[in-house]
Amino acid sequence: MARASGVDLIALTDHDAVEGIDEAMAAGARWGVAVLPGVEISAYAGEVEVHILGYMIRHRDARLRDMLRHYRTARVRRAREMLARLAALGMPLSWERVQALAGRGSTGRPHVARALLEEGYVSSVAEAFARYLRPGMPAYVPRDKASPAEVMAAIHAAGGLAVLAHPWAVTDEVARLAAQGLDGLEVFYAGYATNVTAYLRALATEQGLICTGGSDFHGLRLMPGNPLGGVAVPLACLRALYQRHRQRGRPR
Image 1 (cartoon, rainbow, N blue to C red):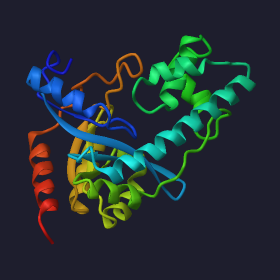
Image 2: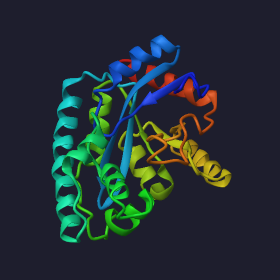
Image 3: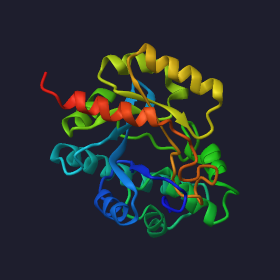
Image 4: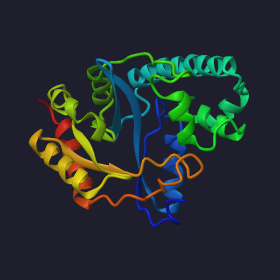
């Protein structure tokens, strides 16, 4: 799919999972697409949820895998509780189907949303979130709360770089996260207007952070507006990513 879309380099950043990286890298080698090993981990700055990307990680790192295993288990408990709440609202879903939608990745709200859509309870994934699955809605279940510092420390211990994903809604947290070791900001992102990107670039410069970007591709069935390679990311961002990675690897 990446090759057909004209994409030469992708980063695989599944939520709380690294199991697909070896397969993706092997496929990339066959098709001439470079694959950066990565992960996406949710954390809470107080009551504010932030998503932190780990780029260029050692994906077999034991500490990182232990953390991800813990959060995957917590996600399963959370998803089961969401299904129980939806059933109480008269919208029963098959747990087996939700797991099938998740595949080998971590089970989460997007898969519950797709199951709701398949059963005809909602007309879109967006509606599923808006009416039932976002904070404050009747089927929302809070997650186990890791701090950003804990998540970034695990990413750094695994040799990676920590980048704040889709940061527009949490810009108030950027300075605090930068002081705790954040490496970069996802400046180029699906749906961000030119003025938003310009603001985030200036914020990254102010805080000494590198700029990254991505499409946040989750499959066209789930997010039809986010095609693979749908966001143009300047080559300078990739160069900065590699440079910061080399700097992090140097003895201090």
